[in-house]
Amino acid sequence: MRIKDIAFKKIKNGKTGGAVAFLFAIILSFTVFAGMLLASSISIGAGNLKQRLGADIAVVPKGQESNYQGIILNGEPVECSFERKYEGVIRSVEGVDKVTPVIYLASLNASCCSVPIQIIGYDPKTDFVTTPWISDEFVDKFSDGNLIAGNNIAVDDENTLTFFGRTYEVGARLNKTGTGMDKSVYVSFDVMEQLISDAKEKGISFGDENAGDTASITEEYVSAFLVSVKEGYSVDNVAGNIMRQVPGGVVQSKSLYKTVTNGIALISDIIKTITYAMFISITLVTVFLHLYRVGTRKKEWAIYRMMGGSRNWILGLIFTETIALSFLGAVVGIALGALIYFPFSNLISQQVKLPFYLPGITGIILTALASIAVTMLSGVLPGIIAGESAARTECYELMREGEN
Amino acid sequence: MPVVSENVVKEYKRRGTSFTAVDDVSFTVEEGKITAIMGRSGSGKSTLLNILSGMIKPERGLVTIDGKKIFDESVRSRDRLRAEKIGIVPQTHSLVSGLTSYENILLQKSFALEKKESSEDSFSEIVGALDLKDLLDAYPGNLSGGEMKRVSIARALFGNLKYLFADEPTGELDKDNSKKVMELFRTEADKGKGILIVTHDKLAADMADIVYTMENGKLRLL
Ligand SMILES: Nc1ncnc2c1ncn2[C@@H]1O[C@H](COP(=O)(O)OP(=O)(O)O)[C@@H](O)[C@H]1O
Ligand SMILES: [Mg+2]
Image (cartoon, rainbow over all chains, first blue to last red; front, side, top):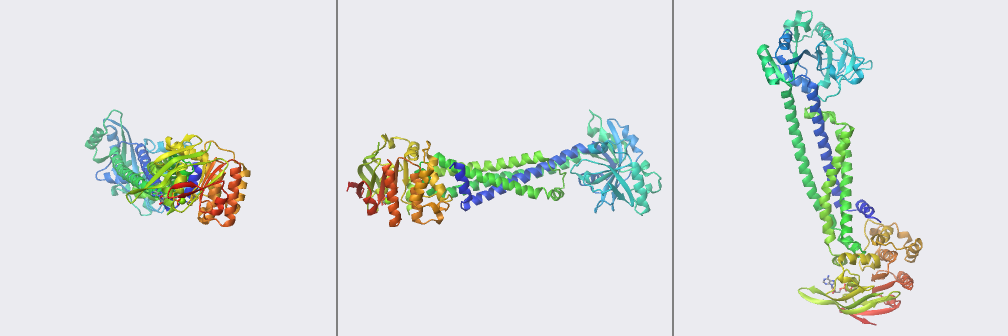
């Protein structure tokens, strides 16, 4: 019989010490796996956000700056109105590269969803933030009059959505971002006009009351202007220039992104601290567990020595048992982690209130392997210490101890 | 070449004062013979047997196995010597829990570097002679003292090693089983094994070729 055969038999038929060590390995591996997944989910989400913001600066009506953050991060419905005439003014500000107007419109009774969703109007003539993100599979068939749905919007069988009694075809879908943008529907300004007049017929009004009588609202009012800054210009300076020439507030993507990265830093610090603490305490506890296991089996060590087993052989056996327990615990811990993390990832993403995006299969596999490695690493020290302790005990002393 | 003990002395401390458990013992365990040591409990028999197998280091004296002075060697090489040459049946229960009787019997062989041929035949011969067929799948916890002893005898024999040291091999056995064990030892000795048994059992000693008695650490030929 080889050491590993004996080790597995001893684990299978062993006493409590091993079961407890197994349990601790499960806990450690679960923590590492779920913690690392959470950390990478939010950091991927943040990366997506950074890319997708597209614009460097959003110019919004004064006092609406914090609402704008809510739209982007959490998809909170918000309305606001801003005179469109400033579009040209902003375009002529030094350092400004692109400008495009957007309209945010909350729909309280969309066919797709039980909760209010955000309808975002974009100007196809100047848009540079929305259409670039249409999923590859839709790019060819997409035409201007269609809706673009965020990744989380459920579409009915005919691939349509109904707003204010009118049905629209969904022409494209955006890639998933893990941000509020997934819960939005994007429409061109033409469609937006339609939506607003339909809404008005149903007695729902939007935005600035002054806009009420205008035949073509989008010509007059928008919610915000999204601005990208020319290469070589400081975003801060350009934002300052805009503020001086336009009666609006300014939100910089980088400050928006900063609130997110601060949140991420906090969460990953918490995860790191918990993981380190777990690793150290579980390693220590496991040392004592295995010392206890070894202590209860003194007679067995004497038997192996009697048969000519060397001290190293005994050390090898205990080390194998210890590492095997860690490995098995790690695998079970990961399975448990997967069982909890994946089905509840939506719930978790709502709880953390940060952009959240699950890593792909390779990322998940790497995370699992890392969890196994960490958990097995935490079995190395206990394995060596317990193994040494067993190997040091003298065989004849033990045979006597067994006599009593 | 046999196992030889020359002027071996082992002292133990008991409540501060030392006493001599094995007192100037010289004798030989010959190949092809059964050597028996009889004596009252506490007379030093087990200590002597553990010295001969290299598990206890004596204060004085010489133990040679096949010409090698074993206490001049390292601990590791004494371990190896046992693995390669000596099957041991200790006085106490010595089965590894969590392994079946069958696995326990196989265990001895995992320690020998040079695997000696022990055929299916010799396995079934040993298992048959010790009446263990129905116990092979049982775990030690479900065996009686006598059954455990028989399994540990089978284990020591299955290694097909040159020597067999057995401490009270018939101690917990009924008359019938004792006889079977001694007959098996006889066969093995006839095949060339050097067998040393420590025993209270008069009947067992009767089947030995050479019998010593031990009293207060001193060994005497009977
Ligand atoms: N490690 C030890 N420390 C102290 N005394 C021991 C030790 N081993 C054996 N003894 C004592 O030495 C004597 C001989 O023991 P042992 O060899 O087991 O005798 P036997 O096998 O003949 O019954 C006994 O008095 C026993 O108590
Ligand atoms: Mg004894």
